[in-house]
Length: 197
Image (cartoon, rainbow, N blue to C red; front, side):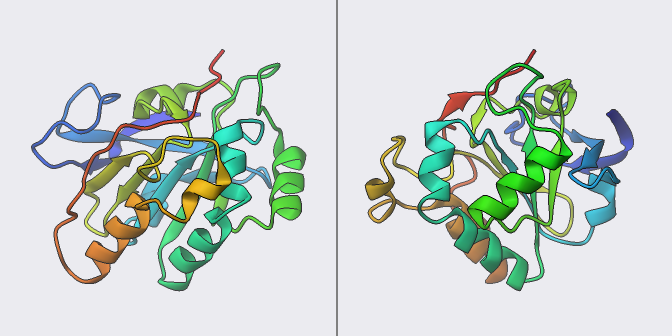
């Protein structure tokens, strides 16, 4: 895993990015995907990108994968955007998977990410300031971070709460699609703490 400022993404003046050394730029990354291929954030420049920090053992992640996460992923892809699931669980920690484990999770859950990225050292997660699973980020086509935080406004592990929740990710993507500024650019992330080493 490497970080690079060469593929940095510019940020709005508002410091929404707690993991960056400078509020003006977010670190790019280079991570292996479930197939062992190296993927970088820079390769998706010009597309809307959703980043989802994931831990398949976390009850909050299970809530969304038993509810609406797959449908949200498929809608994002249908709009030509990119969905990257990132696992920063360290070896021996809850949710840690290798490439084969990631593929099993995708197949068993019906998940539809563009790529499932492996960050076992936690370097990317810490650089991004990912605190929980799920912790969501959205980057627009110009490389601006336009949303980060929780997936919705119901910080519970109860799948029944999804129906009455405001899904901040869907709302932000709808704003982008309509050419509007994202109304809610930040919310408090909720879920299990990322299981860093």
